[in-house]
Image (cartoon, rainbow, N blue to C red; front, side, top):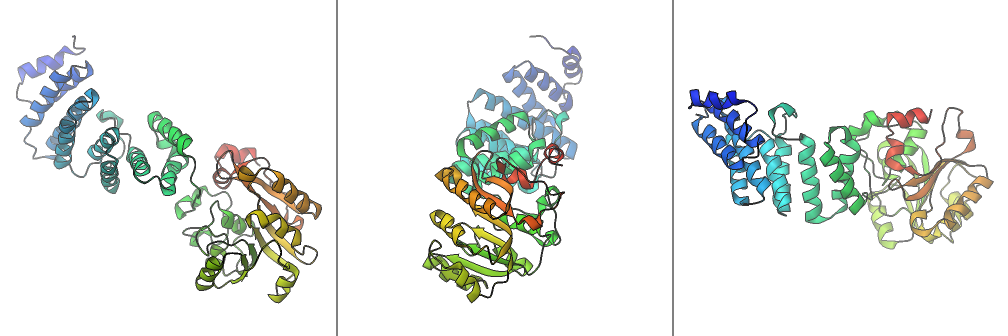
Length: 418
């Protein structure tokens, strides 16, 4: 064993009661992987500190964390590791590092409920920026968020937990260490992407096409920004009109609720489920028709509801009835600024997609965003626009378009689409 800096050892010999010099000696032993000697000096340094000033508490705090790390690396005496981390929390309860290491230790020992608790405690007070100079190995707030994501998924396995990993990958990419980035990528590969990607006000600055009124949108309701896309292309149009075939739940994952609630749109929805129709009638002002989307007379229905010749938005998501519904829309009497057709290629193959494209191309509609996808691979719908709505500056996106990357593109992607 050889010290790189013998002066550290000499300093302790000459000033044996100085806790800061003891701490530096402990660090030297630690670097040499002499755990027993290092821990002894960490413990002595903490004990010789009065712990009255912040500087003294900060020294004690680091001694406890480095000491805990020694036992954690040995994968033995878990109670000792936990005890030292709890002592660190008691010394400086408003710093996040100890909570992070306790959350990480809880994960490593399969105590995932404790992992949730400690990561949440750290996130509640993490106001301290990452500081690589203190040597603690704390990766910053993103480390706590990663610990929370892993612990939450292992505890409940719900779709909302997948969103935690998604947020880390797509919203915190630049903040992650390589270790955390690799872990996030591995978890997403194992559990898949979440079924819903919500918009929140925090994403406004990164949003591809800002529109009039976007600042009033706190959240959206579609699974993959279908409602936001409509508002983007129509520049936040107020009091528009929609036809929604296959409405599903009146608010949850609904593609027209935001339009009705915040932008004063009116429209007509079709749904085959009696239970969903009853709930829709209670919660929405839009008219709802309970019928089979494949056999409905849409020409007659549109006349009964006095729909105008130009309708801003047609949404078709009626599962196996979608193609039949599309074939029955009276396109000779009505025009639609935007059509979204869910073909579900990733689950049902390409037949419905190809037939729907043949129909819409034959009447002149332009495929604006093809193969909107739930992840970078699996596509499930197309977004079309009326030919009169296309401007020269509007770039159409071909190939598979992962919904998040399309609505929140990176700078390099945006340059490629100009």
